[in-house]
Length: 260
Image (cartoon, rainbow, N blue to C red; front, side, top):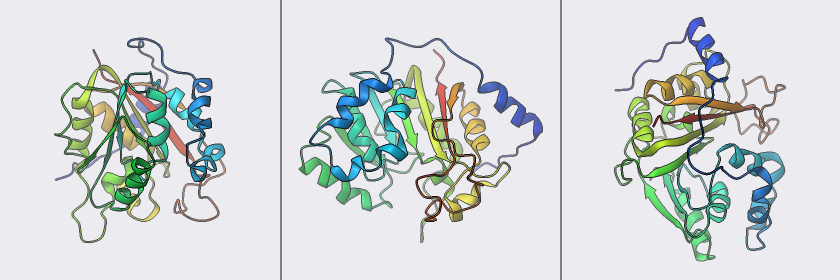
């Protein structure tokens, strides 16, 4: 059973304070935005992917994630592999990318087959599971967990299913697979403050404070946030696939650290 999440003014104050906290970086420094130039310019990268670079700002997003060559990265709900392709190139041959998505999102099968058939994602493995069932991934084995445009999915129920995982168990799994000092990066379409999690079913959005509360409930520490994809003109009430707002939704980007 999923837990019920309640938010009050005090919780929002804690959220604001948490965004200003910092923690000492673990290991060598991560890449900066300029380091992604080669990955983005890779001539073998699909042309269809390049067309979204300006709107999605991958260099800035991944620099925020502090990826490093040789990292083991878990990408939750990897969609059709748009970010997977860039991450795979950026972390290099000595890195490992774990691509995860639920079997209910069957569109991922053809998308990732096309990429691997084209010789992409050579350092990647695919895990098909619900978000709260990452048992194929060893405890303390991952440097970075990235959940890009995905945290709302645990409150979304595809037709004829019981959902894609319980929220509390999902966040517990995230912290379990992370190494001590590892980072969790969460990005999603922002819903209005106080919107219930169930808004994911219709708008595919989530109140940012739900993600903060859920991450902190399992011991993850807020490091920082980025407004690189913020859009104050988005009133957060439209479905994210609405033609008037698609690719320009107000998106939050948070960084959390596992203590240790």
